[in-house]
Image (cartoon, rainbow, N blue to C red; front, top):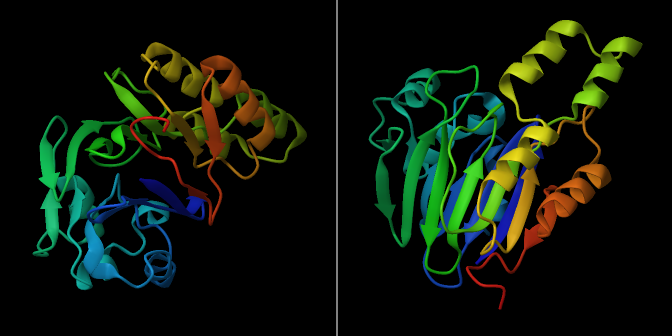
Length: 248
């Protein structure tokens, strides 16, 4: 299994799980559709489905184009409703706690904490990758997860950087408050990771870092120190080749 990062920040988010055998899984479609097509090598028939966590444009920008090209989009009722795709025959509705099966993927949804209608995170299982946690745009996660093998998780901002920008006038208070109420901080991310059994985890990928409120080197270093695991910070065009159930 490999993980391809099409983009990962407030301007757009999209990721692809590509197994050695079977179909790919698109996660989020918050970029221009031509970027998604290119990342898939224009082989849209080899996509099992697309997962969308919520309706914000940086996660669902191309949802209608994805569906128009014959790809089913798995999202909550609220997300499809807000995206205007509820009546589309390619709309697959999933609720928190529900599990669906697509190609070789087993996908379980869970609710997250964001300022939208029915946002979701996903626990994804595939024979090659094992259990993958995908969690973004959530200021907190009340759940722990068993037998994780790979983790894709938001680390959007650092509280000290956010506060410093407020004091210097670089960032207004209303924006600071919204970030705190809708995104996951570095500290909360570390606490979430430490609350889970990481003994079988091979890769941790930090996603959706804020352009102004994060520090790539610091985030990577602190999460490595907190977990003792291989940590990547997602960047556009990055490919993680060994996104597997076991290290070898």
